[in-house]
Amino acid sequence: MTESGSGLSADEMYVRYLAGDEAAFDGLVVLFEEELTEYIYTLVGDHDEARQLMIEALARLATHRTFFRRSPVRTYLYAIAKKLATGKRKPDKSAR
Image (tube, rainbow, N blue to C red; front, side, top):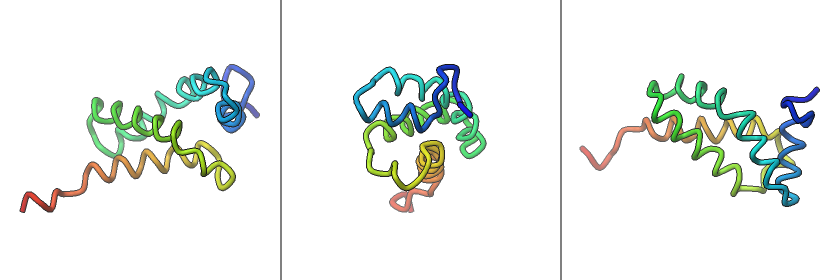
């Protein structure tokens, strides 16, 4: 089963990206940007912040390459997004 119009799964696209195919990462962006933004929105309640966090999550996926053998790319991407979203909501201890 594929997850994109390209006929490739997200994991296959990520493997291609790791091998140097930049267009494969573009495919991941197209595949995940809308649904990931909506997921983050459910956590933060602000569309602009959700969009910024989605961009940050995809950027981290692009730069942190050691995970892939441990979990599917979708699982890892959503874990990054959740960590970013929940981290943004923690109270600032220095404000006390």
